[in-house]
Image: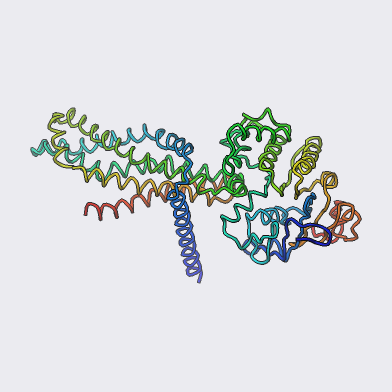
Length: 256
Length: 255
């Protein structure tokens, strides 16, 4: 009976969470469609959430590209496939690792920041104050963060793709003496514009996941400082899990 | 709406509200007289703040009705409720100013969002509101840079800047020294006169309450058990009211 009770509660909690997240997303989308977007706040959030994530995204991308190159270049040279190293790095970066690693890094940094900020606003009654002034928290707080991420994550992904390929090219040249020309030629043969666009499409989906999970978790915060901590942790964990799941689904339909 | 010869601006009618198993209000009734200061007293955790949130539409009763200017705010859309809220202001216990905005920006927020005033007019209106609470010099300060009393007054300025019909004050004097408490009490009375509006105040500070109240309601075990003029409450024969006013441990209120 205890198992059934727990299972029942968990099921209800799951549907309550999914329903709440969907409703907040629909409400935010409604404001975006009606162009009820606070432009100045959105620009400010884009700077805060996007620009400040740039360095960490570039560093992780650089070394990701480098390590793919490191692992593949030596084998490729040994077996005479050195002309394919650039393609391997670009293929992995543009289609999978660029969008996904960028999203994971941004989820860790920005998803946590959104959940913590909104969670703190809940426990200090600032959200209730907004509602008492007739202002919708979704329009006032969620939409600027969502739009900012929808603008910045695809851009960060493009930077990540470029830097990842650059890192791979550098290591391929240093470690396996593969010339830049040969590497770039291999990149060009392996990926085309639809690959890049599909990677960017993934970034839009990931941006929505990060912003909405962070915002919903923040706005659902209960229980003071400890509650803010729980919300922040859960927002990051859930966003990363959803990024991995949606990445598989998107790859299945886009590249499968 | 009216109650005898008194005009009623807001009414809570047979309201019941529970959070899970815990019943906060049970068939609660309360009239808020237009143009008066009504204070709500009661034990900690009795549900006084809940009454303010019902009046502001932030909480909805599971049964019963809440009327503001004759309109049942329980059975309208959130968008319609937001329009009703533009004529009601809630001043929070801990001010609830947005900590990323300066005091001036906080006070200007409802004007920027709900009016088409120019920036010059907004600034003038904000300065007027801050002047009413003696805080013009805090215009550019962040909330974190203010003392407790200043925060309360900045919250008052934000609450009155749109000249609402009804201002709700949630424990405005809690945690303040006697001098600042008097200042806050005087400010509430002055603001009520300036706006020619209505105020509902929740407080535990009896000297502050009897220094400003036209009417006093006592909330006990989820219902209003006494409602009268301030003098009428002082002289109430109700033993629960008398125990509460005297602060005695002996009486019908379970400790």
